[in-house]
Amino acid sequence: MLFLWSVLNLLLAVVSSAEELVEQTHVPVLMWSHHLIPALHKYLGKFDNSLELPLSTLFQVVREFTEDCETSAFIFINQPGLRKDDLVEYEEEFVNLERYLRKSSTALAFEQVELMPDDTFEQLTEYVQEICRIDKLLYVEGDNLESFQPYIDIEKRIIRIEYPPLPEDPELRGQAILTFDSNLKKMLAQVPSPAHRVIYTSLEPNTDVLESTGRIFQHIFQDKDREIPIERNNHHLDIPPQFNDYKPKFEGMTGEYLSIFDADFIQENKQLLIAITTSLFGFLILQLVPSRSPTTTGTTKDKNPAEDIKIADKKPLEPPKINLETSDETDSSN
Image (cartoon, rainbow, N blue to C red; front, side, top):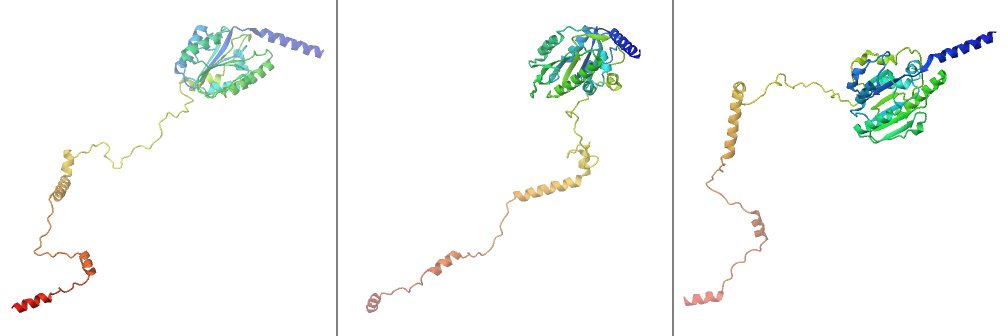
């Protein structure tokens, strides 16, 4: 009897849970950007869980999200069967998704968006390619990490990630969400720059719970710190370097312009200026007047040491020879 009662309760639980699932009529859409997009701040908290966002408004938001092209990669993620209740019920399994949203400078969550056409990402890809002139596309299978082709260049890319549909069983659904979330981290970690923009939604609706309570990552999207648009990831150090304040060597001189033509300056330093001018003219006169050498009454010619040396080297002079014959003739004539 007890066994039959347990089986009956189990069947009732299955039937009641099946009755709670209805056909999905709207999907959640998450957007985030590593760097700040000031134009999107006006949409933060504008649409609560009771309002369904029409496609026209969503496409306007997407246009503002992509039109400036200031990103290294546009990443479009399709998770078939994703519903708002998954982001509330399995918040702990979305550990990496939560971290990306929390650390991003711009993050938006639209909890109920009108169902989108299957080719929405194709249209969005063509639009971004045209306005941003991007010709690099990557198609990635969310459950196959090897399908992601790593790259190291700085060219902008469009990356599309397609996940398999989520299972209906709650336990298997939670395991799949945890696995896909882990794969998302591993794939985004291979993008050379963290400065990317992501759109995360479901293009293939399935079933939804009849009544969904709670808000998507309430601690993020209802955080009062996000009411002011600030850049949370400024790692380029645009802040000017810290230098000590300028302090002049002599106090009171920074605001004065000194000049020798200033009347007060001349009056205060009159004697000093006269002394400097007199000294300058005296120096110039001494340089311009030619100097005279002193005159002497008698001068002696200096002996040349070289001449003394030459004389010492010569032989002694011989006495002149006298012609005796000539001398005798002269005497006889006399």
